[in-house]
Length: 264
Image (cartoon, rainbow, N blue to C red; front, side, top):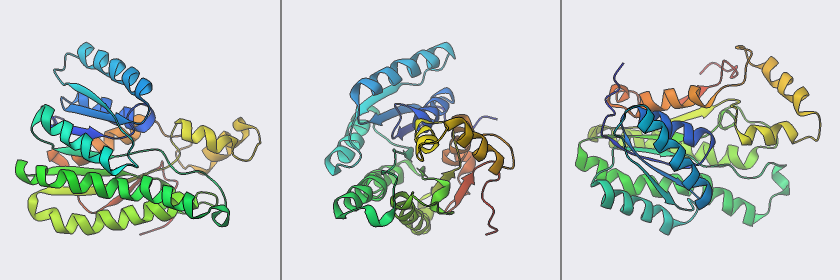
């Protein structure tokens, strides 16, 4: 299926590795020009080189532009959008994705930790979205997609900073989806379950036990019996931000192999 992403312009956050990189790769192989961002310049440059090689091998003419930026800084968010507009004169897709705050008991975090979590998870989404929406309106539409986690809709002890701030993202995205629907812009949130990333490795090691024992325990919780792959997330993202996914908006979709037990 042609998703209609050829020559679209996408900004993908946290794209030096993991889910962000996988999303950028999928969009680029669909023909979209991709601006990838991350805090660490060396890792971002390596990811850009690998991604460019994959694009060339696939025969795609998609361009890959790395922009080192710290999503927690307002000026960096503004700079990413400004440089994207200078490079491509338009923006069609925004994927808000980054790492996550530290794990730990909620009462153990002071105001500084909470402020950092809000800047990283919530204000990043607010700032990037606010900056790109006018450009999407000028293009006649667009797709905005936020990456959170299954814990945002099924809280897990120790993940409180993420749960609280990503719940705010889901509420923000739902409200925004109503306000920009008339502009042919859809806004959705994906809540990944257990996905093979470095973040998951931290979860495996969180209690100091055997990581393989933890892996088997998590796999047993998932009806599909396996940890998800980055491609499982990237494929859903590509559909939702494409013209073919435009009628789906205001959703918070779990991609989790059936892990979420609630009916909603």
